[in-house]
Length: 502
Image 1 (spheres, helix red, strand yellow):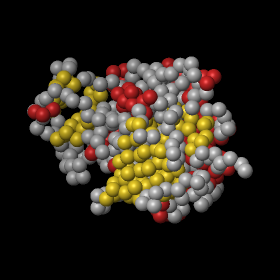
Image 2 (cartoon, rainbow, N blue to C red):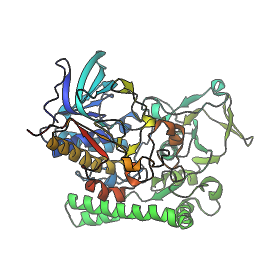
Image 3 (cartoon, one colour):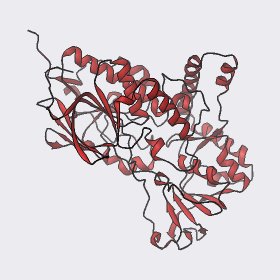
Image 4 (cartoon, rainbow, N blue to C red):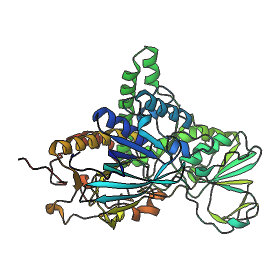
């Protein structure tokens, strides 16, 4: 960062400020320390500990829905089962923090209320609330690294159904699961069919009187053994864990690339394979067409891995069941469905998703004007037109989130190093004059990927252009090669505050 920029004496200053200490923030801190030694930085986290999703979600059975060999960081081998519990993931993150002495850079219980950019000073000024005493602190930074995620952590999304106020039982959202909720011997209905519902249902099936997964429409799942055969073989040969980590990651990523391609090119074949795997657990007589055959092609929504088919084992045993119907209204004792059938329940869990929150409830301003994030255009889903010295980590839908944490960190550190070499104090992306007529559209093509939370909140997201540079492509397999080759001297990067040679 340019030495010409000096913060106010009343403000604590950092070269880089990382927002959040979840999987993205911890990864950012590691890479910044490793790739840019001497850079001053801090990570501010609202919660009282690290973990993000893995600490705010506390419902029974919470686990990853993708493998930890790729969800784990590239620099630290994962040695456990590929689908892991929240506890195991938190332990892994804790090891990353302690092994690399990152704790000194993380401040918990600090919530950013406002972030204001000044073109005069080329600094972000942040108003930060310290939870321990309610004090409002001022911090400045040269670069803002947004790692806060993309949804509201404090509460989940629950639709408003008629009659909810008449229901005599308990209504619970997985994102705010009560610490001492007693569901033993009780009838539970879980509304939803995504990864959360598929995790929760088998986790409570043995303790509830019965648990029903109520879905408006089916979802694709991938059931399979919670182990990676090649990892087991290599460990039996006493191969170094770092080698195993890299080999297994490459194999998984190759398989995922093939699966994603086939989902587009031969969707009916992929569909048959997915449904065939479900049939192995539930048998020929189960109505798979009704309950597990979506109306869309595979990968238009995220597909959760079901370790050892536990969801289907619960259904086959009779401890759990699936109902495909829509809710007419809540009643005193449960739910009346549009088919006319009723579901009685002591506890109703609304596993109905979350609210999109792109900027983490931070009040952003650029040179005194409120930032309208939805009016910006994204550069590769990382930077945004009109927003200087900021990058936002948004991971992949069809591959592990953390893969993008790693490769984005490489890009950001390379960008900061480039700025330092130029003596530049600011950078922003701008659509070149030659592309001013570029067609703009929504953040993502709904025909390609359309989960409910994105469809509800699309207006909050930046626009995308019609070329790869101006999109968040969701294509890790292309980006892993493309991001390192980005020309930081290209016309889409506009630098400012560059020192002139004498």
